[in-house]
Figure 1: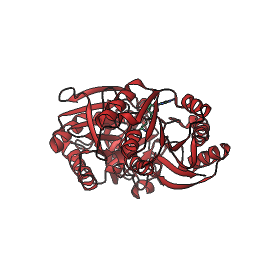
Figure 2: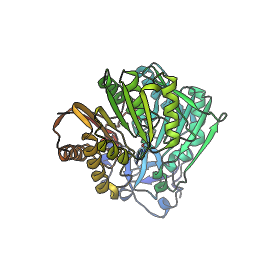
Figure 3: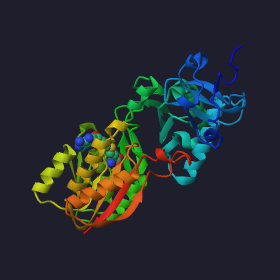
Figure 4: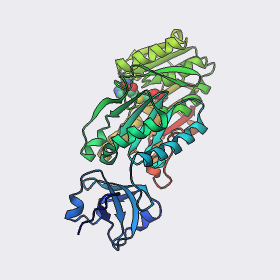
Length: 401
Ligand code: SAH
């Protein structure tokens, strides 16, 4: 007897008593909840599979990796659903319809994994180019179907696979970036808030543009209206800095340790006619903070949007110290009555823990103040209602006395 089913792949059995969470709508089953017998262990990592109860009742269709803690990822609840091009295309159409309601222009995160019914898949859209990230072996195996479905739904000029996430190692996957469809796209233009920015998904970080901070950049730009001086730490392609300058800030200092990132930022500053107000410094952010503190420079708004400090759970204690230090040093440079915007994109750091470290840092800097806004990523980064832990981006804006 075989557990294989021609259309939906092998059957994977949940251990007795473990079907409640998935039955309730949660999209994951963990490896210790699955009958990990020889047949299950022999399944190719990331293969399409059916999740069934011990009595054989079908629960879900998805992808299975016997080697990872999150072993089964639910794509569909209908027995007999098959993860083919038509299935992916239907999910893409739904995701696209939501983004088209949210935005007037085609620049957004088109697919945000579990929340869009495509676990492990990220797709960013920059006009007629799509940048895809496969976070799991299941999605890696579906690459052909995803490319065909993207072609059917959007006919993009090019599709780039930006598979650089270090988390891929957990799934047994290599990292690589390549153009999977169309010609090498070159430098891309991204429109946001009436301005033009540049992204290079083949050389860039993540997918080339951080769409998640869109609303937060707009809010900070609002605070920057008519301001004297703004400091944007970890500026990347200049998102916060250039929007602040365009809002009328007299002077913006933008810092990043990456030369290629700063080249994108400078090009955008010129394109948007604010190069005269912007100074770009290739420096370590903490070194820049120390230097500016020594020169008694003070700013109306300080923005600190660092890369993830904790990629793994074991890095969390060091990351928390890092956020406290960043908050302390950044707060010290905010003029009385000015604002500090600080963010954490480490998914292992909770909003509560982040808030405590920010509060501690401000206090260490001898400052008092109030949180005027706490926010996450924009609406094109929806959150699965049963996966609140995937709300990775936490941001706080404080007014300091
Ligand atoms: N604020 C940006 C995104 C920041 S991504 C936006 O809105 O688009 C984080 C950036 O931090 C990257 O550009 C990376 O090059 C930079 N970076 C990483 N470590 C750094 C350090 N120690 N000092 C300064 N910049 C750093």
